[in-house]
Length: 538
Image (cartoon, one colour):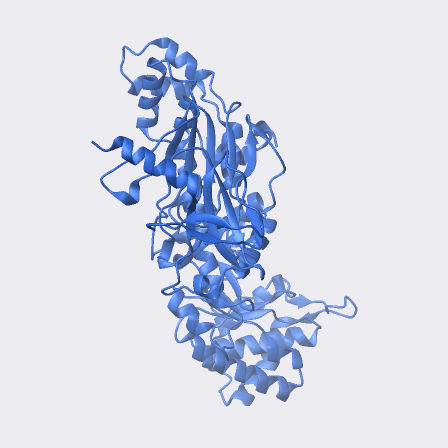
């Protein structure tokens, strides 16, 4: 995937999408003669989001696009020259012009993999100046993608496997980039589709959508379609005036429902007819522009039954206000009665879609046993992640010149783990996840069936574990700037999410007050931490 053939890669993030102090540090490294020192950074988070016990790794594909296209243009260098000291050596700017990621190596958690605090989402190694410049854009690309994917996964767990989830938050997103990211990674996290057309074009996300209240209310009922005739679905026989056919059916429907034929809004019916003429095989009615019971429902039934007579089947109805759960129950009851009355069995199972500021609590109610809701559209609550607006990822130096580096701080939570590391996931005999282990890269990998001594967080002494299975977590993604293997498709990463969540125990998967998943250290890594702490003590 050459960068010059990937316009999305150039648009996703540019080298100057960064903090100024990355450039000032770059100048400092260069002036100190350390620009090419071998260095390694790790990108990770410290706490699971939303009070849960897991997160999902996401954004890797965007990072690869960014890294393979990374190059400072003349305009970029000229701007940096305008904000750095005027007496900066011109040779520094020539050095910037020569930079790319051809010496950068990246190991990463696979996209869609479960992630836990302290376990690197990315390990980035290469020349110190370059990998320092990568900090802010990589954090930007990974943090929100992982957060929204995790949020979507939580919503999928609440909804269960049967409900269809539609992401429709583009208009509520934090800008165009945030909207595209949210649509992409809510799909990865478990949503079925998005309303975002650009996410479909660029990322292959299935797109869905029908009509808004503006379409319905734009019709008064006096409009005459330029061509009201609709041919039968089978393609044989003369066309039928759909509006006239719907008017005939309206009389039968109103008699069945105990309504006057004048009660349903004529403009709404005209809108439904217009939409059905445009989409006879995908007709869906938005029922609550006026009154669901007295207008939307009878108008929908009239048009749906007229279409049915021609061999077409309506694909659904949508509600966007009121008590969605109760209305869905009432609508399903009407559908079943009408199906029996008019001898159209397919009407019983017409899908009912709902939307309207649905959060986790509202979703749990809509997903309860016995609910007649089939499709749930969620916007604000998935794209803005209102429970926690940031994952809080960090990018920390762990080694320079092959020597470990450790940040010691007044806040123990912000201390880092030194050295180049490997990460492994330990599983039980039933395939369930036991814990993740961090160890120094040079240590031998844990072996299935063999005892392993590890240090849990804050423990005063090690414990012993005997895993039935051991999975290495960090995969070589880029080596010296070259892609090591094709990245999985978005659909493949989405499938990995569901597989990974199925391996997580119910205690760790539950969304309220979950048990915390353990990330432990090998004995050698713990010894290195203790040694560096002792060396730094006065």
